[in-house]
Length: 253
Image (cartoon, rainbow, N blue to C red; front, side, top):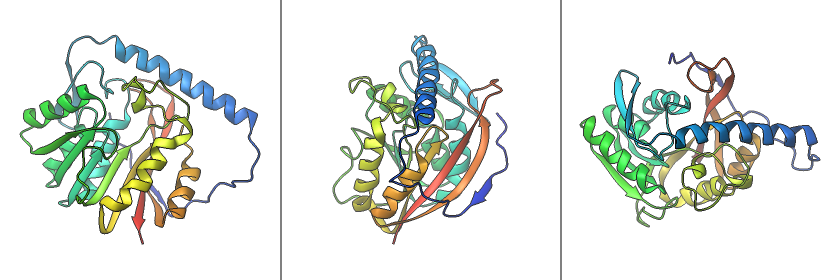
């Protein structure tokens, strides 16, 4: 996959909380969720570990883990995030295969990762081993595996973009579906106590998410917000349909 050059904007406009629900928007939201579900069903058909090529390296993908074979966002963020993080202390939330953590570690970051999916935890450990990098891999929902006093320069999450419900016990679908962005908002709230002074959330997001609503919520929580990257990328390899991929920075004031 070729990574396009980024476009940069600062502080895009916020949504109006008093705006009435748009039936067309709700229909589009359902269509997006259904299309995404079809891809997840293809991911479920994988029964053995397999490798994908990413930015000049091989990444192994375990069955039952969010897969860069079917979605292009992992590679996009694996290219973008290490350049922002540099050699800082870095936490990846919802690591999946661990690809973003691997590339951040290769770039010199002190990396910790965590995931609610036990298969993803093991997948991240294996990709760290295969790529000869040190990643402190944890397990748990959001910050459950992170110590109360642990703090980071950057906390990144390629959060679930679809603001529609998913079964709470289906950890694969939780990678893509988050009813009304409840988990994402909880992540934004809880990150504050795990950020160093001047630390930042890096939110990886896409065209299906309610990005203006999340940005406004972050501002209400005391963050300064800015859009660092926005690019149109094919939603899956070989698919002519493109989607906006974005990296937002929410920085503690």
